[in-house]
Image (cartoon, rainbow, N blue to C red):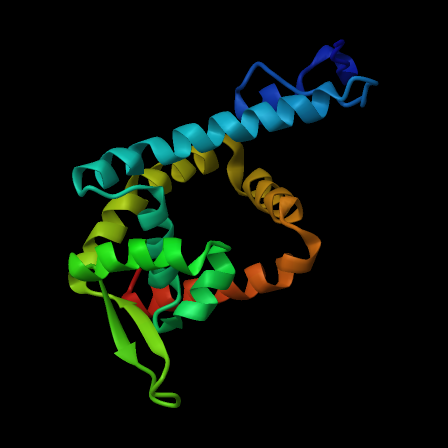
Length: 188
């Protein structure tokens, strides 16, 4: 793959201080896409590594992390809505929820409008664990923001949104807004 730069300068290097750039020209073997795929895999590996260590100390895994994350961002979420977000089976969610409820990280409350619904909330212990899991990820993004600046960071978020299936983007946007509201109510 030949990388072509205008004026022999790597714009990614200029913005990010990183000496590597995917080519601007799509070539026949899709190496740009392969590069992006490789970067996604490695970024995810490193992004989740610190929380993995914290989770392991509690006897939990990544499924527990996802449940804690979405319950924290959507206090009072129903099990049906959580299943829809996670796209897992009832059986696998039930196992993870049981661990988190038995460990006093999540509590179920009866719905005010529909007493058959079980609405999920983090307990104080769950909020503390969630904050501990988020801290290294927030630190990583703070370092990225410092390195590339707010404009590039916003562009990256737009790019990530476009990677999401088109039919899911609006729902994800709504989840992000609800999560923001929940964090502001918690004072974060």
